[in-house]
Image (cartoon, rainbow, N blue to C red; front, top):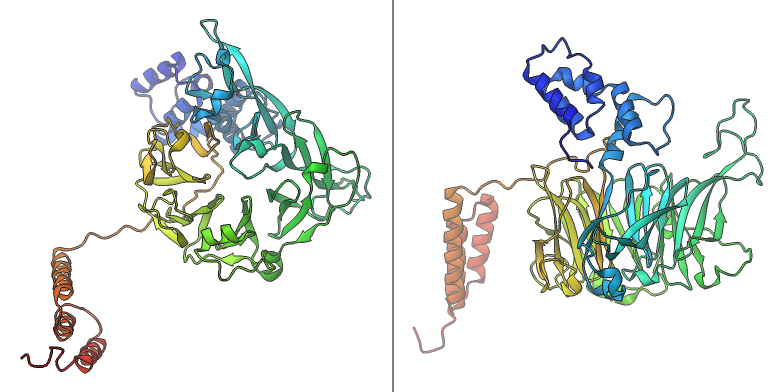
Length: 574
């Protein structure tokens, strides 16, 4: 993103200062706007209604697209909004990386000399807006809005002083096109991410033709049978980028999301359809390199069988657990291990090892819009911007201020509006945004290995970390040695929060005095040794201070009189 001053932008500002009439635009204004940056065009469009209408011109954004998105394939007659969205996606995309732990020590010294703590990944010329990024053992995966999965490779580059510097994501290559989603091993250790699973849509010329009315079938001008377009899962080896396995599904099944869970010998693929159904199949990764063909069984998950009326909107997975988010905002948790069950729920009494696929509803009376699932804790984000944590809190990774595990969602108050949350192995990160648009990263939990920059001792509450955050950052993730901030802005994306978070009303002076009197009465009650005296103090507090229904107050007072002992003093004393 170019922040340097632009001569054309200065010329346009001078035109504004001359006082042009709103009804009469300056000469060649559109030509001048097409030569400035996207940021300047948006800023000029916010000055008045006339320039705002001009800033939405289709021909203007088309010129900007051709000037900066040279590698992006654009349709010849795109709708006006598409040109503007394309230019903003291209302008705002970026990936910032910040070194964290000791993982860089494995890199040779000659490669590490002069390496910056904060760096930017190489930008593939064909990329159009970044949607997701995930690190693997040797590379970094990048997924854009065109359905292309890029493989960013590490390389040794020469600095300005002639020193060799080891740079992450310095070279790029296209791994797969026409992709819908991708997944890797969900564990936090990147050494387990040997294979990359990509959900793609392909034309299956070898299969029988299908009617155009079938889901996923391409349109046909003649109205006859068309070659089917099938969804496939292609498996790539991450070190060689070679495809080693491919699974093709029936054209009637259309999938939109892919997640994986389990170990290498029993890898479970979770596939979410466009109708909200979840299917699963098992793969043995140790046999993927063996050249052979076999059939895998696609089965409907228990949550889609037991709750057929609830379509699933999102699926999140960890090594031994799965989190389902429905379209209505309710959350269901599926746990496959007794130890993880105890950490999430707080007890193992109701755990049934023979029925591990039954989903457990999480009691939360709010609509959840975003989730993050770690190995032993999770984070939920509702449509009002409230954050709820649940699970193991051994290192303070829930941000509740203590180290007590939570068996149900517990609200955690943050100082700014959350944009994204991420659950690591034993720490949590939150990308937050202030009212002015400035963003920062806060974290809690274990600070070992520089997981929390600026807080090596860790923290039981969310605190601001020493991380430089761009204004266009939209998501984050981390590995042992690096934190990744994905930057992109999509104007077509609806707002995440539908309603503002509830604001607590300031307590009045009368209510404050009432609270202080009740606190004093409670202190007197605790210091009193006589049970009779305790009942009298409680009855007096109910009569004088508690604003409850009169009938309820009378009942409570009479009940206290009935249970009040005649005397609890020892015999012989008055």
